Length: 236
Image 1: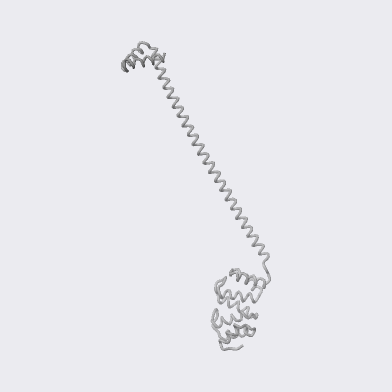
Image 2: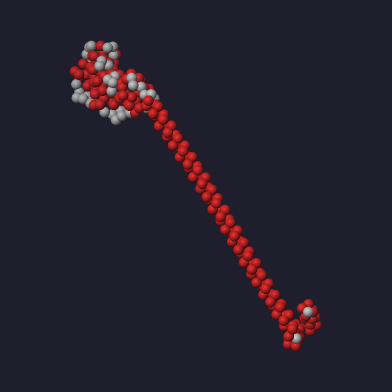
């Protein structure tokens, strides 16, 4: 029936024009109420099609939203994995640093346990640090040796304070250690002590005291002290 009506309408359009076709269709609908049901069904089917399209559109929109949420979830999971990897790497770095610190502490402990206690050995170790230009460490070992009254270490420590190596330059401190070593007969210390009296470094200038200490060193064969005495017009 629907197909027949469509054929009739197409024929009327061809032979009578669209206006005539519309008039005849209106008359037919008035004369035959059953035709209205057919056209109503066509309208209903159009509405159903529109609803189906809207449902389809909603389904597609929901699908797109689901894909967006899945993608966002993937990004979050990747960010979490990276954060966990960074934490693990940081933990490894901390563990490595702690292990290195422990090794250093152990090495320091071993070194402390193996430190020389003999004054001569301590002074020799100070010399090694001095020639390596690690003056602070040299001063430390010279100090250790002087605690046992070792004259060469006293001289070395006096020199370090006089020159300002590994410690703040301090002529009075240098004079103190030179005197300790000189009084034990250390010729180098006697010469340097005499020079400090001659120049007035850390002490009031005193030529007679300078000559006294130069002579003590010169009598032990110290050539520097002998030359300084000649320059002063003195003999030994």
